[in-house]
Amino acid sequence: MSPSKHDASHPDHANPYSRALLLLLATVAGVSVANIYYNQPLLDRFRETFPQGASWIGAVPAATQLGYAAGMFFLAPLGDRFDRKRIILLQTLGLALALTAAAAAPSLVVLAAVSLAIGVLSTIAQQAVPFAAELAPPAERGHAVGTVMSGLLLGILLARTAAGFIAQYFGWRTVFGASVGALAVLALVVIARLPNSRPTSTLPYGKLLGSMWHLALDLRGLRDASITGAALFAAFSAFWSVLTLLLAGAPFHLGPQAAGLFGIVGAAGALAAPIAGRFSDKRGPHAVITLSIALVALAFVIFALSAKSLVGLVLGVIVLDIGVQAAQISNQSRIYALKPEARSRVNTVFMVCYFIGGATGSAVGAYAWRTFGWLGVCAAGVLFAGAAAARHLSAPEARASISL
Image 1 (cartoon, rainbow, N blue to C red):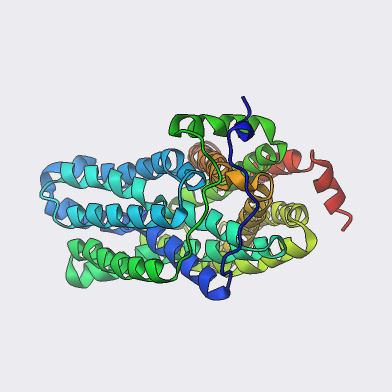
Image 2: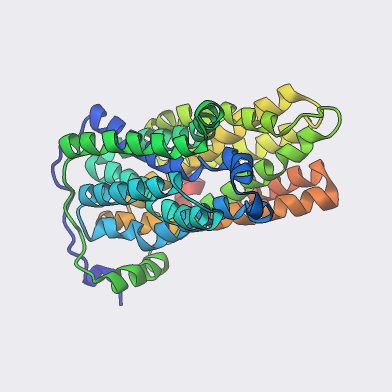
């Protein structure tokens, strides 16, 4: 049965849309999503604190990522059923409690368990992005989504740097404690400044989750965006999964810190997000996605020619990040217009496919590196971009966008 028969469809309601509100939602997204990346630069400190569990220290970040995937599926759709402001506040409270437990964890088992909870509850960002799309006028939806996504991307970008700095001087437990403080301040601002949202569905929880299958079947635009986005994120992940290996060999002989510094270059993608959103508003998302796919393919051509050039790799990273982020903003802007009363659920379908693509790209990238070397990784990236192009250009709107 189509979910629309049980949805309480309402037109977008009037809310105080402003730049300040967008910046608040961007901050919510960035501060929350950062929590799933704090533990990555802390693994050696965990090893020192819990030497008896040194052989499975990787369970901590793995549990966090698994929790985030579960939270996207089981919590993110609730934004269509309940007030998003209340969901954000409840998840913020739960996240603060989980982080407090992590800061006081007496064993690696406890730390891994609460890391799973941290991942689940950090999906606050998946409420903030659809909320921005809900509040924005249709003509500004792309810019609104791009602004909030820039906050999310900066949160991802700066999380490792902040965690490493704090742990260096104050210890790893302080990292989680500092995040609790940041969340407390953020919660107070959310209470004072964020408007309430109006639920758009009356579906019971089980049917709410099941309706996502129907949405994927009924909405071709959602399928197109999800497959295209997954293929581009696969290309992105294929590169990042083996960059450290490339830098460790000749002629670079650089450690993992160097690969981390390449992440700073990712600021280009974050800063380009609002610009991509505005362009999507003016020219349509299909035109931006077509250009983005071309940029991703170009990035891997640059990488193929830069196996011994740091400058070339940096240039390729900039092109890759801009292409992938511009496509994501445009795809999200596109899917939010498909079924306004189900924005949280269509976002969940898109993001689950997106992460499946990322996992596939990481696996393919590792295999290509072992079997064919750096050129094999670059070829895989171009093939993923080609798959994205094939799916994207199968839509008449996308083919028409080429002539714009």
